[in-house]
Amino acid sequence: MSNKLRKYSLIVLALLLFLLLWEAIIRLFNISEFLLPSPSKVFNTYISMALTGKLFFHTWITTLEALTGFAMGAFIGVMLGYIVSKSKILDRILSPFIIAAQTTPKLALAPMFLIWFGFGLLSKIFITALIVFFPIFVNTAVAIKSINPNLRAVMKLAHANKWHVFKNLELPASLPMLFAGFKSGITLAIVGAVVGEFVGASAGLGYLIIFGTGHLDTATVFVAIIQLVIVGIIFYEIIAIIGSRLMRWHQSEKDNL
View (cartoon, rainbow, N blue to C red):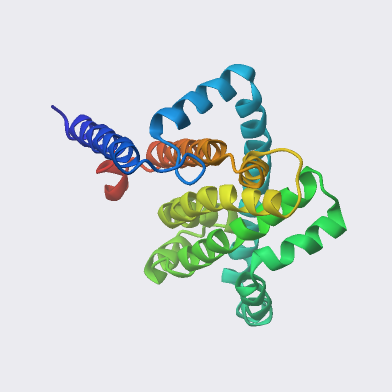
């Protein structure tokens, strides 16, 4: 049995044991469903919502917000991170503002985004982009700054222009840290979309959680949370696979193949 198959088998076994224990505790102590629904109740609700299409509609809305916000935040983070890494003056000027934006609670900013951009998708996309931006910005800047000066000297001796330095040195050298930022960013994108939906929305998995909570429908809340976990894992694995394909030369990625 391969290491990956063994790992996934252990995960599935642990999950089954957890669900059995969960079901047993609820039946043993006769816990009310609105406090903690049983796994069978959550499963039935999940199937019911999936068959009606309701679950996938809300999943699509959150996915659209998360992916668009991630793309926007990642693009700005990479571009600004690269620019800042090349200029100490810009680093000193912009870093305090970027840190201030990161330390400000996003839940406090969300109402302002709703006022500025409305209750539609746009406000959630901008909230998501703001949350995604910082880890990718930092990873990009650190990756470029950490490149061995001796390698830059070799490129200079070879009379390489800026494009060749970027293509043959900076881009390959920064990929490991860049994809580490992407992995963090894609999970934070889900958080950003849900934060926006918590403040004001009429669709999405975050809205579904608020709706279920307001109606004491705990099973629906669990279904929405489970779906968020599934979507987050899928996004993360896609980024990891892309990174592995682009960085077959890197030892940390070879270990994951």
